[in-house]
Length: 294
Image (cartoon, helix red, strand yellow):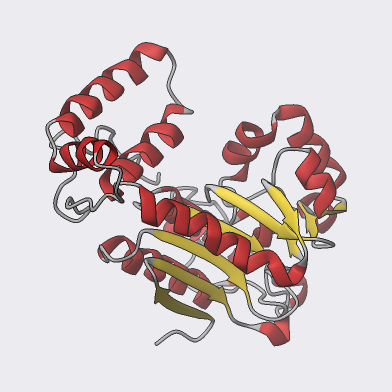
């Protein structure tokens, strides 16, 4: 079904593998569309509890496919674009939208937690696509770079929103302004990565984290928590969080999952949570208005 990725599900874990190894899994418009479709699929499948994203071969993602040469980032060469006959630009035109940003916004909205298993080079969009993922681990020796300024462009994929929130403004500016390629150990020290592993242990570690989530927690609770934490990053006052927390605790406290969570704990057995993300999210969800492109 997919040309540039693989999508596999086992034991409650969906694994999305970037699959253009001959190009170090370089990102192109087809991959963007397929990643969006894969996250649509994982959200719709109640059997999927966690998503892992990794790369085929020796790379995670080498960034944008540079096959078009100097015009790689020149969207103006496309037909039917935002440039009028008089040379003026319609900045709200759909063709102005950054393709990587469409992908990261879709991942941001994921109903399931997402783990990035960075198995090799991840530069440009190859690293910015991981920023809305919840946990990032990398192979020892993996190279990571926010190289945009060295290509004459700027950070994309909404990374100007994500990166400072993950590592702080000073570190984000240093990495983007220098555009240097760093090893995974520096990204770990800077707070971008959870951990670094031997290459042959990377996927096993990702699956171990995923299984801990899938086997022990309530799917609806994890889904709500993911949105509460990410969207809380944009809140202006803790009262906003208090409103959402209170509604969520009230709704979850009345759920079959809460009864099962307490009962299984008291009975010292593994829980079997009945609620499904597809049908049991609380009535106040979603509590935000999705901003439109303009």
